[in-house]
Each structure stands twice: as C-alpha cells, then as structure tokens.
Length: 119
Image 1 (cartoon, rainbow, N blue to C red):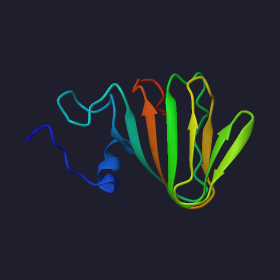
Image 2 (cartoon, rainbow, N blue to C red):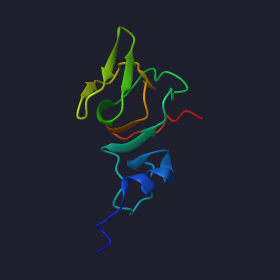
Image 3 (tube, rainbow, N blue to C red):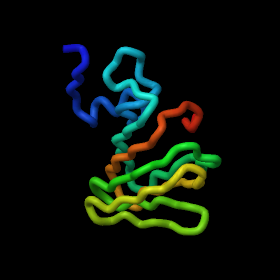
Image 4 (tube, helix red, strand yellow):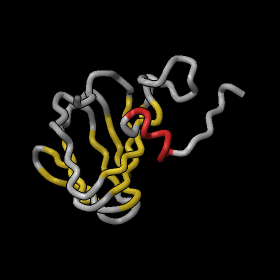
C-alpha cells in the first residue's frame, strides 16, 4: 500500500537533517505534511544550534529520549535530563539549544513551513 510508510528513525533521519515528516518530503510521500513536522535528533555532546531561531511561526514540542539537552529561551534555559522530560513553546518564542551530553530528542512542530533551516 503506497499510503503506508514503514521505516526506522535513525537511518531515515539522515536524509533530511533529522526530519522524518514535514513539508520538505516530496508530494505523494506519506511523510509529506504541511500540518506538522517531526524530527529525530541525535546530538553529540557539545552540539549547539548554529544560530537562534527568531520570529518563530510554529508551536513546538521537544521530548528527551536520552542524554541531557538544554533548550534556551530569551528569559530562561530549560534542562531536560530525565527520559521523557519535555518542553512546549508557542509561536513567537525565540529559541536555541545545546546538548550537554550525547542526546536523542524527538521534536514535533506545527504547522510545517519552510524558512528555518540553518545553512
């Protein structure tokens, strides 16, 4: 059935910088969506986002799978250090991140819109 896609987050994530589902997947692919984006992020210790996201137009949820991950916001830093810890932030909130330990995180953002990739 072409409507069903079965994969594994580790190898699939390599194709789009960790993103498994979103507007960037080709039309007709079951993983194409303009409603939501899902990312499987593997980050080595010390990994940091290259630049802050400013003027965010999406709402986001980030869940810690393993490791220790810091979500940085203008007024505070949230430390996620227990499996299942999560943080949600609305559109309009600037943010960045830092992996204090080797970390795996699952991020869900909505809607899926282009324009936020860091070169």
